[in-house]
Each structure stands twice: as structure tokens, then as C-alpha cells.
Image (cartoon, rainbow, N blue to C red; front, side, top):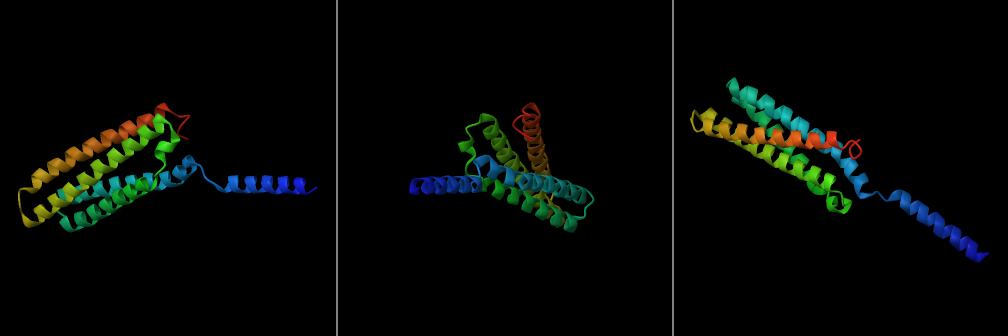
Amino acid sequence: MNNKIAIVIVLFATVAISGCINSSLDNINIIMPKLSQNIVDGDSNYNEAVNYVNNNNYDAADQKIKKSISNFNEGQDKLLSINNINELNDTIYIQYFDLIKEELSLKQNAAANLQLANEYFKSGDKTANEYVTKANSLMTQGVFVQNQRQSLVVNNPDKFK
């Protein structure tokens, strides 16, 4: 009789514990929508900043650039909080996260260069154009990587739902 009770308790405890533990993919699925939103918001703020810079509204541009940088940094923080990517043992997922890492890095650098350009424009320094060129190049590369990441999703619908 005691053996049956012990078995029931062990089974109950096992079921209870297994229901409370998230897999690596579950944890990633919780973070990814927020990380994706950070990238979308960062892109949007960056594009608005570019428009303000083009219209010589440097104060408004500065605010949007700061928001863009903040968005990309928050996305980077979320990405860094995912410490179990390699546990997935899936090259598609690992490639996806490598692309996000590269995309965020390029976009962070683009925003930083746009911020420098904006500061130089404010002071009337023509060096600003060099930073604009660099920012444009980095953002173009970032969008290219973003498109690679989106293609990976489209080409692997069984992995990304």
C-alpha cells in the first residue's frame, strides 16, 4: 500500500514539475515578439530621424535618433538574455539568431553614425556628410540582413509559426 502511494506521489510530482519547466524554445518564443518589436520601432524612429535631418530639424532628429538607439539596444539586451540558443541543436534557428545579431549590430552602428552626423550638422561642420554616408551604408546592409532573415522564415514555415 505504501509503495502505491509513493508511486502516485512521484508521478504527481513529475507531472507537476514537467508542466512548470519551459523548454529552450518556449523561453525564446516569449522573448522574440518583444525583440522583433524593438527592431520595428528602432527602424521607424531611425527613418523619422532621417526625415528630420533632411529637413534641418536637428532637435527633433536628435530625439528620434535617441529613441532608435534605445530600441536597438533593448533588442540587443533581449537577444543577449537568450543564452540557450545552441541548446536547440537546429542550424536554422542558430542561423536566424546569427542574422538578428548581425542586423542589430549594423542598425545600432547606423544610428550612432546618424547621431554623429546630426551633431555635425547642428554645428555647421561639413564632416556630417561622411557620417550620413556611413549611416546609409550600414542601414542598407542591415536591411539586407533583415531580408535574409525574413527569407529564412518564409523558406522554413515549419520552424516559424
